[in-house]
Image (tube, rainbow, N blue to C red; front, side, top):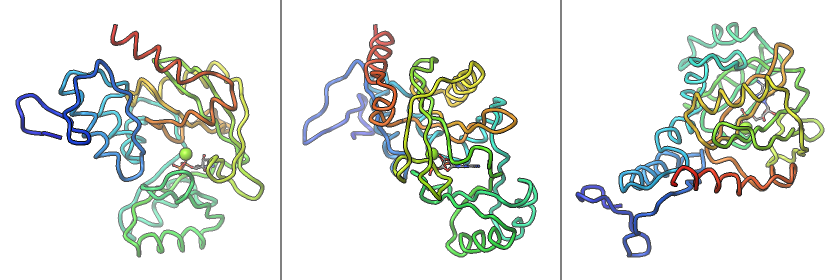
Length: 254
Ligand code: ADP
Ligand code: MG
């Protein structure tokens, strides 16, 4: 990238790219989000329309910040706490209602870094271990009644265009497809659709994969992904999600 030029440039294989009408960013949330978003910002400065804005991509790549933004917009979440040092350990365990509870590395994705602690002792042991490694993590209420299922709602331009239920493989509570989970098409309730749309809106994402879990007290948002995968949801629902995205972007540019 030529950062300082009067006219910002993005170079690829030695050549300056032309100005595109629109770009469709695909930025992995793990690690590279800030760099990916910087490239997107450069295109925005060149006047290209970006399907998701660079600022929204940065925000959704940070679990802690995302949950704060969602909470501020009154999107229902599992009870979640964060403590930076050992002094807060007992408080944060108490805050989420005690064990069983879920502990999540802030940098984790695809289910890696999500641990279920069934007892107080287990929770303390995992928290100490993470702290020894100077890792940042969330402590969260365990939604047992979800029984290893969660929902991915795919939002395009403020509408839910496809939804699937993911189920954990036997013996696991994490339903990530990358961990061997299975997926099937599902019909969402009106309320679930509203929650998914509100979550995408709170994050200012035009295209979003909103992960929900069905708790006794209603649907709770687990996370919002700014570059949701297409293969799993298209296979499960037979909806041409990519086409919906293209149609949305074309309309915006027109
Ligand atoms: P990742 O970013 O690694 O996908 P998630 O927060 O989405 O992390 O958690 C992975 C999976 O673990 C979820 O899809 C869900 O099936 C399960 N899970 C996560 N949090 C909870 C919770 N609080 N209660 C019950 N199950 C959960
Ligand atoms: Mg997830």
